[in-house]
Length: 146
Image 1 (cartoon, rainbow, N blue to C red):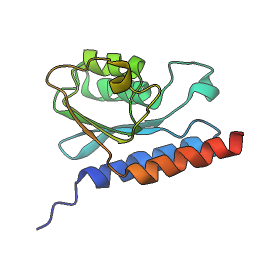
Image 2: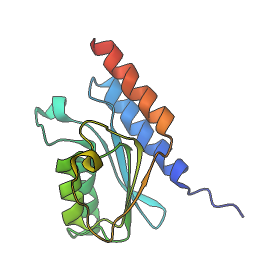
Image 3: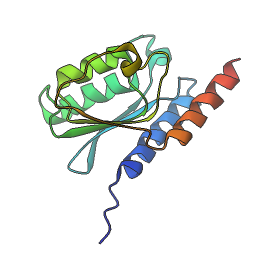
Image 4: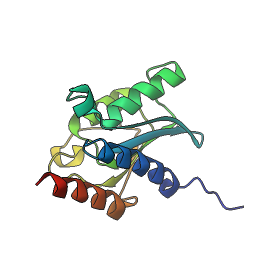
């Protein structure tokens, strides 16, 4: 039997969160955290609604997942996020010891890889999953702002 729980399957769930952010006037970034093929946290950017520069999708998802698990470490968890994490989020992901990060679109200006931010040495990173869909949503959002 074919495994339906692929990176693309979970990235579509993160994209749904990003679309919710778009509808709320937030920068359309969505994130989910998965353990054993089960979504344990989902979020999207809330910086405008909460008037909080730290309310990125990843930060919200990290907090939610830690609460669900009852501990601060996200070992054996995977973060799916539509945009490459910034250095703030990468720092939080480092401390959470998350096992895997999968992101869609690269952030060539503020992404952790461009800025040289380190992740935990055991964290695996996969980039470019549904990159086109993630990028299109981001471009559509910023077209409405210009």
